[in-house]
Amino acid sequence: MYPDNHRSSRDLYQRALKSLPGGNTRTTVFMKPFPIYAARGAGCRVWDLDGNEYIDCINNFTSLIHGHAHPVLIEAATKQLARGSAFGMPTESEVDLAELLAARLPSVEQARFANSGTEAVMMALKAARAYTGRRKIAKCEGAYHGSYDYAEVSLDPTPSAWGGNAPVSVAYAKGTPENVLADVVTIPFNDVEAAVSLIREHGPELAGVLVDPMPNRAGLVPADKAYLEALRQVTREVGALLIFDEVISFRVGYHGAQGVWGIEPDLTTLGKIIGGGFPVGAIAGRKQFMSVFDPSSGKPALPHGGTFSANPVTMRAGLAAMELLDKAAFKRLDAIGQAVRDGIDAAFRRTGVPGRTVGLGSLLKIHFTDRNIRDYRSAYLNEAEAKRQTVFNSGLLNRGIFMANYGLMALSLPMSDADVDQIVSAAAASLEEVAALD
Ligand code: PMP
Image 1 (cartoon, protein in one colour):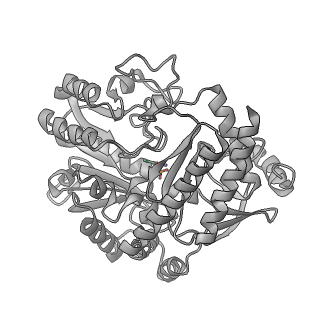
Image 2 (image 1 turned 180 degrees about the vertical axis):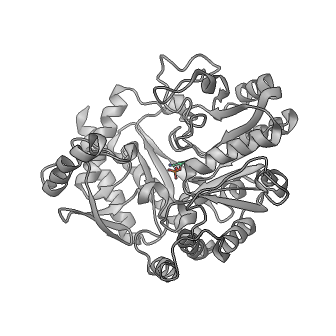
């Protein structure tokens, strides 16, 4: 088992250490004692360099909703590759994908493409500033929105740094300028009173409020409807834009998270699934707000380029992926998500290990505590809980299930009922190991 039967990965990691810092080019995929290198994927399975097979429950951090190497997506991408992969000219493909997004997302009339979710969030925050002429941004404590300085403030504060009831803005990366911290208002997730009062306090300087309706790193608890409604109302009151980060949460429904909650943000950021497996990001919203990007009457309020933005390979694969993702597909994703959540919850009860799953649709997170998980702070693991998580994770890996080390699972459409059973049995057996700890 890992690490013993992963010699090729271990050797490649030794090689990587020379040419990549820490052998790594993506912090999120690093693992100790060395990462397991992927060789290929098909459907819901991946194989590593040593030929070990896994059911992939991370799907490139939620982006591969059709699993690996789906034949329709291969065809869409290769057909476009044969015609050219990128041009210094726009193509019809970007119009097609923008139309699809506008047809599906209730608050969207127009979209603009980028190459990552990070860029999408950066451009949405800049759009809010350009539109309002204000400089501050509010975001939720513990929520991940990519690597833009402002968006990553207070991503992982420790209890000694996070402050009292009103969270303080804490730098995520060393070197974050003080001015960035001063311009970010960190609000607690799912706490209407505290969030509204902070937004009112900074209201006249606030350009936008960025919120993920089901923030993965802050616990993956779905937001209370009342919380999102309160953000909708108070942003209108203070004249700031409400921005939904649906880079992940677009996965929860045909009309996105905004369709599930029935709330229309001013701007939406997208990524991951809309690229059909290729790099992508998008900023979308009503024409009124998207007009900051409009170059048709001279230099726009917010110029935005990107050599590979809206490249037709991404656009064509993304369009094919989204077309495959019809209402029946969401029904299936909801069903398998529920089956995995129910199966793991039953195993928690059987084994007596404290904990449960949270999530919606094809997304779930496993928490090793009986606390009521509401936000980043209640999801924060103590030492005993972290130990349980580590033992559980290696149990799953050794049973051929690959998921994020912080407990996230993102399921995919190629998963059969038998695959779902395999995931649940592996989780149950791993929980037995956790139970044996105490
Ligand atoms: N927003 C959210 C909610 C995300 O989960 C992520 C990435 N996991 C991003 C933004 C950034 O996207 P990318 O990794 O494509 O830059």
